[in-house]
Length: 409
Image (tube, rainbow, N blue to C red; front, side, top):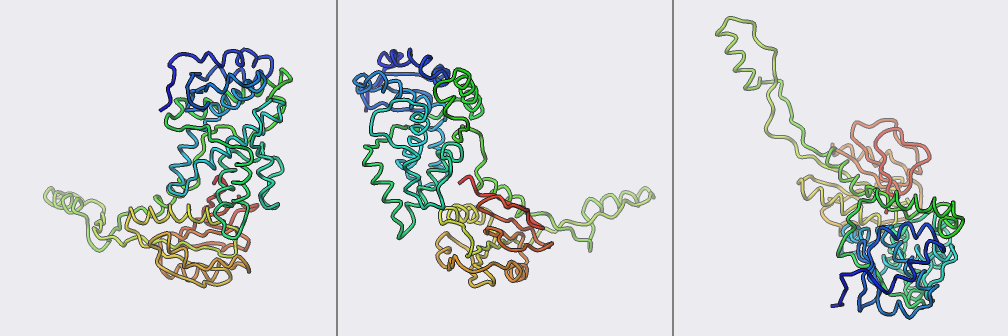
């Protein structure tokens, strides 16, 4: 257990005093952080930066760079976002890989702003070079945030027969990477607060003409409040699969019988007919159809199935799993994530929704969820609710149904 002081850090005073001149944007953000000395390594926990004894041994230029690194950890809410990612991914979450993504994004921003950092330092621009060329962003800082970088790295690490995951680990070791995030204490301020502070700070820096405010014309890692796609899926399914009462026009309701009897007793006109509500309702069911020729990656597929299965288990609904391209080539009852292994992910060929929808509609489900990249004509209408789960927003919307974009993985 590391000993931590409850007083303001003495080690960080010199570096903080230089920040207004070196980087006005980070100096503005520094006002919202707390600093404490520790006998352990320098680390960030929530909105507190714990400064270790090794900090004082660095040149003053690297002290300002390192404290700027941790100030950005606080401002970008990386401790809280790490905890949220851990809850989201569950047992699949790789904490060190998430920390690597956060450090790489921050270091890239600081080095582009001409800050000095203790070397060697991990950089996002170097990490993305380890990815397949088709998956690299044009500008890592404006197009991706730390969560997106982590998700891509996690997919690469999980791909069998691909060496990118191992290459990232080798790269991290070559840079002596050590995690510096702790998530035991979440940020006490909401994402909107920090998003506003970061945007204001970047404007201050841009006007001053120095620091990250100039280097980062666009910055993608802002701590905005977003709703993960699996929560949106959860809400859509809960709404679609909710049990609605079934009315029976063959018999009147009890309240109608009472009102009718009272009207007869008073020799008044009877009330309008009110149908009874059936106690027994049909159990809702769900069809999950996977376009096996689409570009849905395995990590997204797992998250998607986890949400669908959890809802099915909570509500007792039946679910069926289809694998299709131009025709349905596999069909199973969906009980667990292991059932995904029974679907042959062909990854080639064309797509035709009509045969799949015809077979799915024959089961009379409450809803049909289709994982696809929408690279085929969609039906003009459907008697059953359709949720199109797509990896990126389509250029033109489908003719019917609801689109769920899963690009925030």
